[in-house]
Length: 497
Image 1: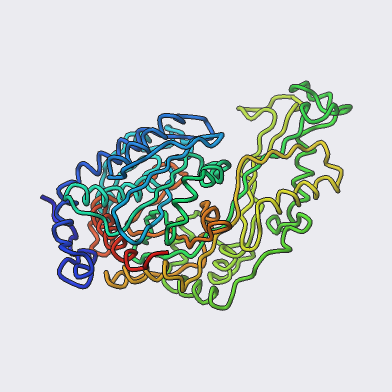
Image 2: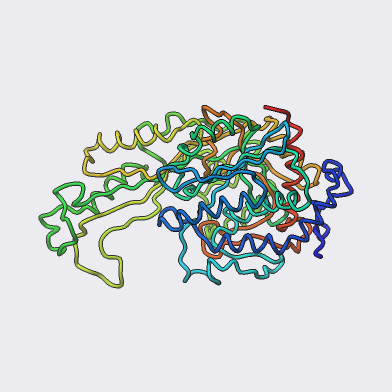
């Protein structure tokens, strides 16, 4: 049997964490005995990618998520239709006075197998020098690895015949990677909404540890809106219906240039400051406390390593690390994800494109909303005569934010404090998840991303998640599982909502 911990401070059966969890050692033993089963569970999940943008494994992914919930001990789990990719709703009644909400995403981003060192759906186990054994695969860290660790914690309770200290409400979706266009419909389901109202808060399992073992508590996340701008024969008779000979550009409008001109109105000449009319009106600046939290994070981070990992040599305006970090979390963005028009193969091809499309996203900060920025974008383009530029919004939601002093967040702090795991508190994640659906009206619940463990490569080739850590300061799969056990017992102390 593999011994959990490798000296890791998470293995605290005889210390304060053990005192918080009745007979923690017994659960720890079960987790270790089930290690191989937990890895296989993750590998099988990686092998079944639900990709909303491609409508891939829509029904299969939802059914697999439903079975995972039932196997973990949820007494009921059903598929909830959304108008798009379905969600899954599950409940576990432990007869406890406190109920915890959990958010899962079971979908993943697209991938190109030619860019990977091993097949992206294989869940390959391999050695990461200086870190230990990891698993490589699409969804490994975002978010199937951390979610598997949480399910493994529930499996350990089930295998040992022990009741959980809290009741659970699970809501999972298969469209997070396309900005959750139908998730509000799932949460608005009467049975789902009624169950969530009984919870003390909702969290998403996350792998938050850095290479030095420092974990993170995140108080919120930016919102996101994904959309496309389209110009071409489908939007106006000024443009050809198909690609035609480029000589015709002397007498026929170019949709590609028209799109470029429209895009150019959306940011300043510096290339990054948003200039959409009214876009910045409701932006809430960072508070003094939030800047302090960012400074603490900066002090514990290595700027050179961060730049190296990102493949850059300087930040915008050659700013210092603190200023760049503040921009990272406080600045809303208008980002071009991709531009598609005409011929993009080898060499040239003398065509006038019949269509041009830009794929963009907004990142939103408090107090911005999805509906506000979409309305302002359309008004901005109309004011400048771009009535031939079609706006297609494919998904989106606003930012979420939870108070640092919320009992929900304080419980996360206590778990890490008892485990003697150093951590920083981040005002918000610069990435996005649809926590606002829980955090905003009508539920108004605290939310958070929480967990330990380590991984990287979300949305990129060779995505990975640590399985067996060789660093005593960093959690592997089993240690992460046991931290979720500790967290469940800590949440049980929060009292009935």
